[in-house]
Length: 256
Image (cartoon, rainbow, N blue to C red; front, side, top):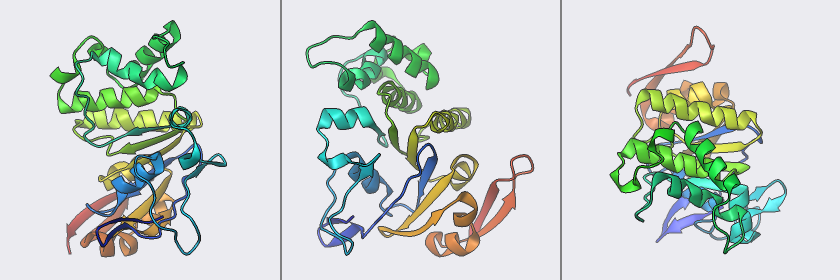
């Protein structure tokens, strides 16, 4: 797929495969196209002109997501955007209940099942104590947990997240990534843009590395998080160690 602003290519002939029931991490420096790719996948932005391989499509479980009616697409996927805002004067519970709209008829109110799903989502996101707060009174980290809960209440089969640990402290970051792992274990396909390479190393099953709008590497954590791949993209020296308990990569960085 392509995406351009003016004459500058933000995404340039990008093809991404996200394995089902796994956590795929989108990596890359600022401006590499991660956020744009997620918005295109979610249908918030349309893919641009055709590539050498044909008309750009976003396919999930054999269905062209862009061709689905909006409500049907919202039953398939949820998007948690970076620095998402909720300007309406809503309680946290009501904001999370917005995630249930695709699952009910247009004029129906919240059902008992909707409210149960919203409370379960708040609990899973570590935000149940915020249910009665007004969204406008929340800190950045609290808002991030609420947006995660709204997406969980939507009960998607494809979950797209742009910097889901943005504004979160360390404990909340680890909790959020644990939620993503649990969702993947339940069969949800998770795609998350991440800046923290060590967080990606400890959580993800599959990685896609973007640079200047192109995919420069894709594969397992062990295949992508290696100096020969990372150093040309990030312009730093990378050393890779192994976590003593998990065996996963632990990265350290120095100026190149």
